[in-house]
Image (tube, rainbow over all chains, first blue to last red; front, side):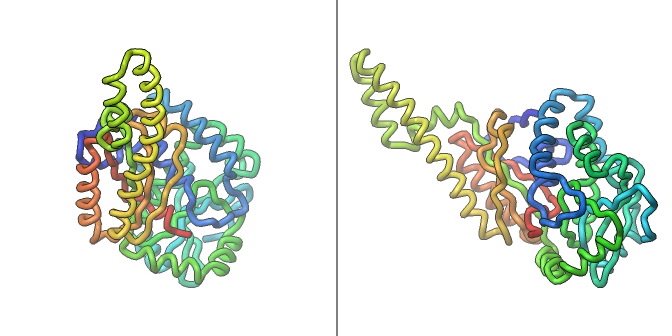
Length: 73
Length: 271
């Protein structure tokens, strides 16, 4: 999950396949509108999830499976 | 939507205008919900509708859901499915995307929520029309930056010059001073660059948010030193990109690089 080398002076576009899991987590678990359902994910659990994904990042197979969940139907 | 069967909750992805969302549902194959092969549906109330899917309480119930979140592979896969639904919707109609993990026990409770927040949600949806969220990561190659610091800081250049022309004993002490000055100047120069990027791009957008940096961002090489999110009019995207490209070129020599990500569902502009 390391960042790709970026050419000097060029604004790089991260396409779907380059988007790291963390990028997506940052948005999906980010602020969002504060609508508290009857069940919601707590701040502590968000942190926990980040830690877990951090560990996951070492396993290419698992990461590929996870990424596929976004790109496949 | 019929009353839920026993033992399930309704997971909510986002909220939009009922007429817009109905058109999307009628005209497309919808992506699956957070649970594999689960179907997304609408819960409607007045002009609004929430996009939902059923989730079993055995997996998503209180306590159970928290347990599952400790399993990063389980959670990350569902996060991705959530994102896919949100992206699908946001690409076709203004949608207030909810963050991952919001659930209600019954459709009635969702209708109550939609009624209670109708004005606010409608206002946000109006603001999101024809707009999308784009992320900008500001990355820094620390080695390159380190080497170019003297060009940015006259104070540092002066001290380096002095160190080179002094006796070995003095030079040692001066070098220590140089390093601490380099670190301090580096911090303020980085901040100045980010502030400049922010103020140059803000006029090209309809909203700007600073996203929090995480430990993992700073550990990468190049490190991410700033994360910004912009709300951009689709028609204004070209102009925004050009402005970002100018900045990318301006700062490249000092080790900065810019990454553009998006379009995102407007998670950061739905408050």
